[in-house]
Length: 249
Ligand code: URA
Image (cartoon, rainbow, N blue to C red; front, side, top):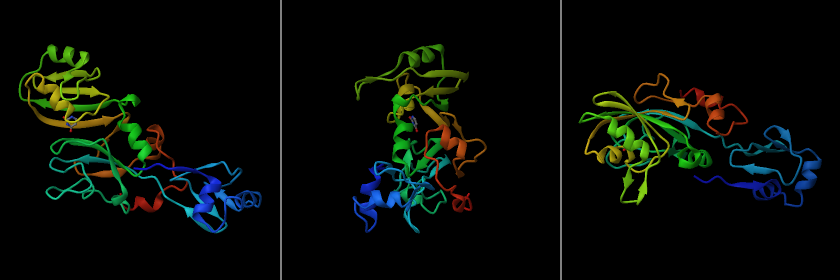
């Protein structure tokens, strides 16, 4: 989940036979290209996803990968598990083993799950400070009432962490179903919020994360985020469109 950046001269010295002090000359000779544009300064920043060419040699062509999955029940939000299939097992991508999860779902929760190799993006998506709204469809064992709406708006006290949840919006859809929108993602948060009322969550489905929605993806299906979705959610636009990956989706 690292997201290292380094100065161009340091990057060149670490990834070629040239030294830090050679870099100025290489730049003047227009032998270094950063994302397809001739480098201009030794101080330019190179991230893990910056495309760097020195003469005919590509020194870095890591591409950011952003995948959206409609997670089915019984699949674990982990990269390895001895008992259950994992979300990595059910996606198709040549770099799937380099990906991590941005915001886990419980084993029996279904819905929108994001996978990426971009640590900065997944941190941003998951942090409550980003105030990214996540919406869930919830089915409860017992009937709902206005009391829930008011309590969730006020925040529910979690004794274990000694914190009160941030205001969440509950829209009651029927006696036993509701839509819940919240910006946090604490461990078993929704089950514990309804647990305050001793009301068991029978089914939980994440429908959206910010402006990302499943948009027709069936349970178990996944796809790469579209270019506009990557841009809107603050991801890195790849220098080359990852056309060679589209064959997998
Ligand atoms: N809250 C939960 O309790 N479970 C989830 O999977 C997601 C949010």
